[in-house]
Length: 357
Image 1 (cartoon, rainbow, N blue to C red):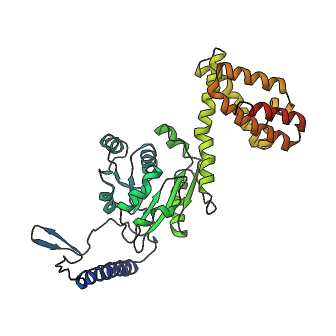
Image 2 (image 1 turned 60 degrees about the horizontal axis):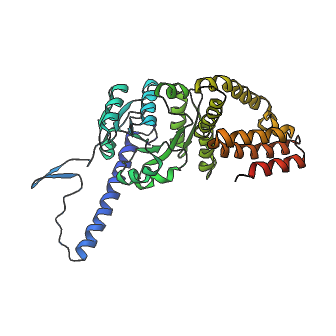
């Protein structure tokens, strides 16, 4: 991402340097091939061939550039839940969404309806000429594959939305004068409008050099979000905590609903009854701290209640038993740390919780 205050002369000098570097690298390759006895008649840099005709132009692949002080044109690769929600939210916040790329025709059409004016492409590489800031919204395992398919131009930046991977995964796409980074909104993208609304107040983990990070921080703030920079090497732990907060919590809700069915409650009934207790517990944790918010049989050393719970789970909800045991062991440790659970009942509780492992 070029500095937005850079002068026209500086941009021209940087473009000339990039062109010279590419030409030098190509000349070295040609010289090596000719030294090996391979005769070549290569097209010159800045040309393209139609049949036997070579057409010359000043820049091999002209791409869009914003003016000084303007927001960069954005291209989004991936039109799934994250890419589409970001496209909608950013456009509403005044960021120009120039293009989207997705191999799924249905997703492309939906994105185009929701983000008017964005050009649509089937292939990621075709989008590069349309944008200055390119956002990769693809699954983590696909990031290195897509990055190898792209080649940035000077003045462009490529970022991804992964919570687990660092910006270094995008290095294969870099060229002289380009930048890579990351922009991970800590939001559950289960529903488009809910996700867009949830961006207000959400944390967004950003990566990049200082100039790119400043741009990404401004982008997050324009969505009403809070930009944060993580300590180096901590993204996997950060994302594991996010998984427990979202997917892990959904798994817990599913286990609660399973036990609620035993008591004659449907899913909505369980959410209505136990949801209030969850909200109260979260409020206590915010006000008092996590350890002080712990209540229940583990804080009282109530071995009889724990035994009854385990019998009920084995008989009626065996699928929830593993989750209950794991949570119970963590609760015992918290209660001991807080000093409200004596060593003897703690030992008995651990033995009961581990008995079916």
